[in-house]
Length: 191
Image (cartoon, rainbow, N blue to C red; front, side):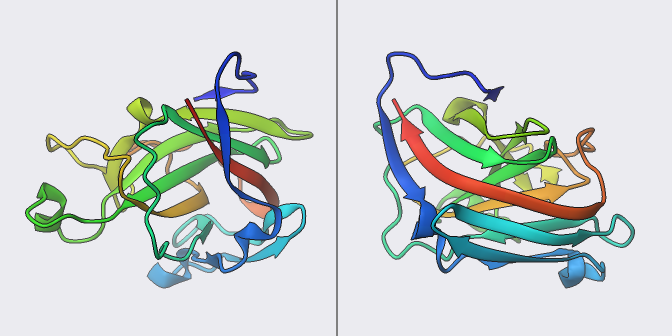
């Protein structure tokens, strides 16, 4: 992940921007007994994640997309670009892929997410490039140590989180609790 590295001589295709974020819902640590409270709201500017993050008992807030009726086939692309105002927090971006029959991930309990840490600037917007080759498989913030490879042909959900857990199995050094207001302006694919 390369914060603020302006893409040079690459093709960028917008996937979701502005009010296209409608339908995204919050998913917070209250599902596991935590007490953080944050909500998602879509506007012409993008997707806001606003609320209060409490570390004890969980330590995460997030917004996730609905499951896409038709999964994205991004096999012609190298990765994603996020434009986000993140208050200097290190966020986590997660991608879910449609499970295919007989895939190794079908044998695991719980869904595998492909994750990347997303460092942001304290003020203003950050443009973060996330190469698909740098995504790591995780299940409930723990690394998956099986021979899996990311399949860009079947992306069916995105999620943005601020969590005390960073890359799979590691703590997030860019985490801080308290009031939170993040704006995800757009998600694009690049080649």
